[in-house]
Length: 232
Length: 232
DNA sequence: GATTTTTTTTATGTATGCATTAAATTATGC
DNA sequence: GCATAATTTAATGCATACATAAAAAAAATC
Image 1 (cartoon, chains in turn green, cyan, brown, red):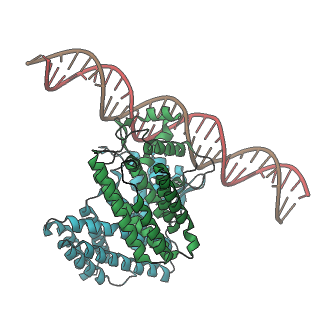
Image 2 (cartoon, chains in turn purple, yellow, orange, red; image 1 turned 30 degrees about the vertical axis):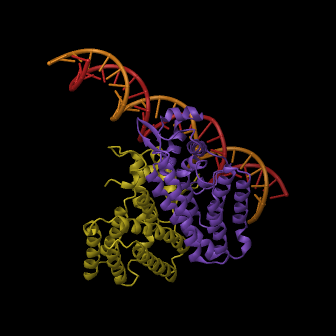
């Protein structure tokens, strides 16, 4: 699994450096909660954990700190950052703006309905997953839908920054997956968005996607608050 | 001059590390065109230039690469990235989205007209600069206006990412400063925005700021193209 | 002279050593 | 027993060494 997000940072080294390996592994451990929010580690601990020397670990922590996943606190440890409901609000506001830009770019550039096939397939997978009551499958398909949308926007910059912020909220999303209502509205929103994109209706695409993103945010934040998740 | 953007990366070290010093200095040299777009340097060259060993230089280049200012190409040098008019289009689209979010947040949270004094002062300075035909003074005040707006939005995340993208386009903006028309419209737009913010009119603030940003983008890109600046 | 192969050079990623300094621990005074 | 000062420990930032691999240069071949 080559982490595409690292690509803009170095120009296609054939072999993965230890720094890249460390960054990818730490990122994986953070979003999967293997390194829990709020926990701290010394560089030497992480180096032992990852079976490498301190130098690439240092480099990796600089990268991940810049991406908002952790905080480097000299002599007190590298702390995995947690997300509060207020943080979620803020990050979702940013994501909403950026994904609306992605939707706009897709609507403005779609050449044929065939271009949107990846979106339809993701939406199909979302529905199929719901039919067999597979929430994880649904979440994966949902994530895929959003990623395909951003891919279709055709901007590496946009993709990179959206991806960074998505990493920050991934853990909280996983936490709400089983406590949220059945996500039928979500699927409807996606179908409506696909239609607007097909028609090249830029304003409608923006509007629909904004509403979708705002309603998802509102739901998630109220769930976090209701269940007492002050930090995730 | 403590670079505030580095703050989220480390937790307030009192003394500036060599890595931070290197990042700040390289950033300064890039945006001021002292390290021209397209130029390449080996790590060892940069280390000599900055009078330090390779380690903090490596760390600094990782940071700056993540911020889109340069590209690390092993054995071929650290290349200072240039910006094409298409890149400008893309970056300005992103900045427009994010600054509209900032405007929205300010309009939604403004408690009294006094809160907006920094904006008024910046707008005043812009006008005073134009009166004495001081375009650099105008540009500095313009930049200050935008920065104060983002400050007032009260989101470090938003501030950080806007600032990152502003750095990427700074050189191109400097290039167009003397070839653009007298920027009277810009001042009018700012005054109108301040009024909308005072009234807490979220939708109007978004709309005005979006139009302002789009018109600035359109102007700048057409200037770059007209004058044959294919890469800046 | 052009192309290919071999050799040499050197830039990089990483490991490790070390000086500095912050945190932890111990000693002292009240 | 608690607060403060002194001492010790060890984490960090940085410098440097070194193995590796890529680029450059030289040599061989056609």
